[in-house]
Amino acid sequence: MSAAEVLAVAGALALASLLGMSDSPNAMAALVAGRTRSFRAVAVWSLAWTIVGGLIAGTAVARTTVGLVRVPPHLLVPVLAAGCWASVVFTWWTVRHGFPTSASVGLVGGLAGAGLAARGWEGVHWGGFEGYRLVGVLGVLGGILLAPVIAGTAALMFERRIHPLSLHLRRGAARPVRAALWLVSAAVALADGTNDGQKAMGILAVSLSGAAVLQPGGSGISWPVRVACAVLLAVFSVLGGRQVVTTVARRLWRSTTTDDLAGQSSAAAVIFLAAWLGLPLSTSTVVTSAKVGTGLSRRPRHLHRRQVLRILGAWAVTLPACGIAGALLIGAWRLAR
Image 1 (cartoon, one colour):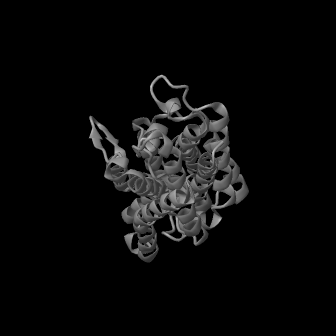
Image 2 (image 1 turned 60 degrees about the horizontal axis):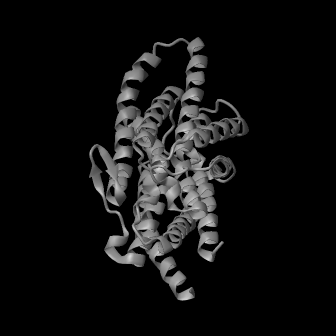
Image 3 (image 1 turned 90 degrees about the vertical axis):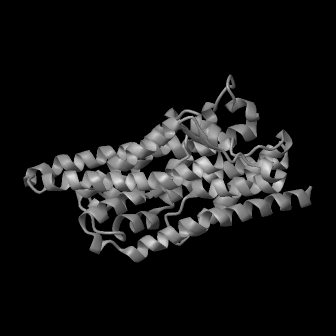
């Protein structure tokens, strides 16, 4: 195994871990905010469903992720390694400071920067629309930007429907509502595994077996690769993201169980749709935006705007920062050869 392949394999595994850390609020924040059970019980629930999502995931998102760069075969693995490590380093730093940033946005930026440095403008699949599908860097970024808006709007509208009904529920109905929240949180964890898990799986599969595995007629993602990435994604969402979970759960606004039910349902629907379309979505931005959407519907004055702006600022610098890092890593690899 060459040095580039070792770096790419390590980068893919690190990416799966960091995706778990940055996306830890996805299925856990609503349950933590509602104080339905202990953090440990919530963590085990999220871990189990995230693993299931990774195991049943297809390959559409993996193909889209690897297809963001168009470089010669001998450059593909180094470019994938550079994109992974650019996202990993930046996401690790932001998560340590409690920002729910997007490793997915970082990966897109890192791959684009590495592709540009490796082959110029032709080294990146810029894309756009392909029929009804969003493809390439521009298509993926468009989807990443549009999905939070859709999730936030859907959560706002759902909240306005569900909240008046919740006012007429008796106290005995609180238990079924909480049970429903556990179910939709499981759906978010499942959707997270199907979408985020594929990003690392695709890079790891290509690094180990070549690009042909993801092409039509290829063998696809092997079970060892699928299991490794799914487990890392799930485990690190529990081990490394408690501060991020707290940020989303309690520092955006004080939501109720029905508020979180509306937000989680909307987020799960958007993430599942993206996985079906093969769009490598930023699931953390979708869940956070859905939480903000419910806040705007119910208590806009209680929404912590400074915290929201802080999160948006972290998202805004992710793409250019990781793009520059990816280009620098390819440059360093060329000098070291």
